[in-house]
Image (cartoon, rainbow, N blue to C red; front, side, top):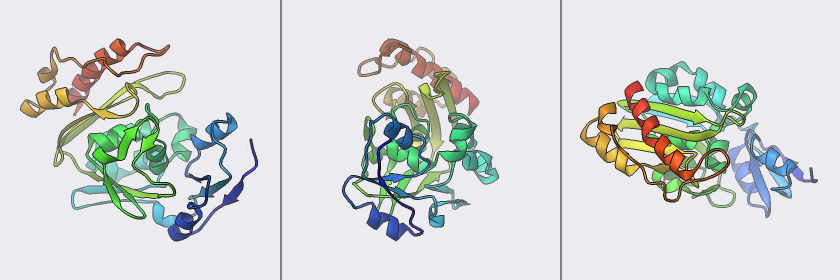
Length: 262
């Protein structure tokens, strides 16, 4: 691994200031960034570690909103009784990310900022119509995810928290690649204050909404409403784990299972 400067600020203001420097990366749990650095895929001159900033951690539930700090780990979300009561599907998703080490180091904000095309959290954020808060603004889920490892974040912009509207019903289904435990295809469904939403991860260049399935479920929220439903394979991934057509076939199957479980 290459040499780099390292800072561990105690406040959000100091972190945001440090992150403005050229070729500086923000590090949260480090589960993606450190691996990329070891492989030579990322070579920052400096890292800004958010681990000491207490205002970026914690979970609150009030007024129909579950608000989770960006530095809250997957394990903490999965184990939180308030999350499990308000949005069981979100707790279920967090509890099945990676392995125990990843869940205890990886963070909500880190996952969203990295925006891996097969990551689980983007599906929950888009599938619940959440809002991503940064130190300068708030970004709706529909505007946050831009493509392969690309988000609406500006250079040096720090995610501080995510607000999830509590749905009427929601569920998550994941067909995982057994070695990496990333989603070969994952589908998050919900109905509630943000309408009917079906978010898909693992199938394309980034998380996306399956609008054809949403339309069917808006007319009838039931697994039967998805009988015979199809999703186009155009633009979906083909790799050694599965073809675009295979992924397209999985999406309505998983969506139907999710609705049945909601």
